[in-house]
Length: 303
Ligand code: NAP
Image 1 (cartoon, protein in one colour):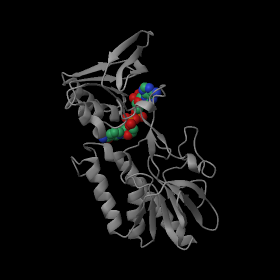
Image 2 (cartoon, rainbow, N blue to C red):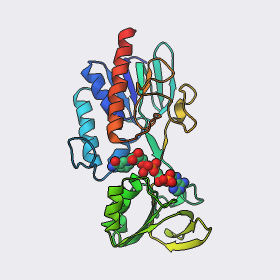
Image 3 (tube, rainbow, N blue to C red):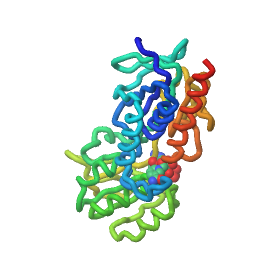
Image 4 (cartoon, rainbow, N blue to C red):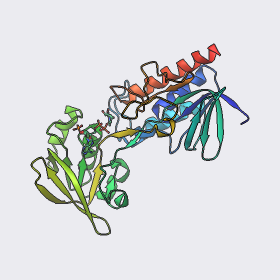
């Protein structure tokens, strides 16, 4: 462990990369560690329409510009999965390949896709089951697909797929959507979108690929729906398991930190969707990044 960074950041999504920008602008040494690709969840959003100033930008473009901005300011980024963090004289972050030391640490790990928990769900990923409409939608041109969920992701996925697929079923467990009414209104105008309310997917039937799903309504009646693809968009779960021994989490697994982004461990901060909060949006993730890095810089000044 040769180098001690001023700020170690786990996660190169909007929160982590914004924290890197703020850290570098305060002239601190910054290393960002990312398990997958930069950008986090937003990279899969086809069109961001609610970020101030930019009326339309793709999630990929947004993430790429943010990444380049952080790199351009001198933030180091390494693509390694963090398996453990430790507190001590310095903060230690262990990846599969290396061990890194930092005077402060920002946890910006975001969240991962929630699964339906059906028997052969994992086995059918890539063979009809998908968690990313923009990644896989093109495979379903002219075909029949179903989207499960009632949040903004499900609504936007359904809208995106309506341009490609022949028929889109939007299956939601209640009769009111959690996502924005303006997107619901746009979906209602699409003749190839069918709303299936008060229903859940209870079984996946497949040969080589997914062939149909069982949909069960509130009365218990089961309908078999032939589909080529099933897009699961039922929310996210925080990725905090590797910190649970050290960092206080709430009962749902989110880091128990307030608007100051401070965790229970001095010098360790959190930012973005993995933190307890009421609004999980791009703008609140980037705001968290700014707050967490500013708090980290303040902490460094107190050492
Ligand atoms: P979400 O808002 O948490 O919605 C998850 C949906 O899945 C809910 O409708 C929920 O039903 C349903 N659900 C959960 N577990 C289920 C299960 N086991 N079986 C069936 N249905 C289930 O998740 P999200 O849509 O991924 O959005 C996450 C956050 O990102 C939200 O804050 C969202 O606004 C934000 N987002 C924003 C944008 C944008 O602004 N452009 C785009 C995408 C996402 P209930 O409603 O009954 O709980």
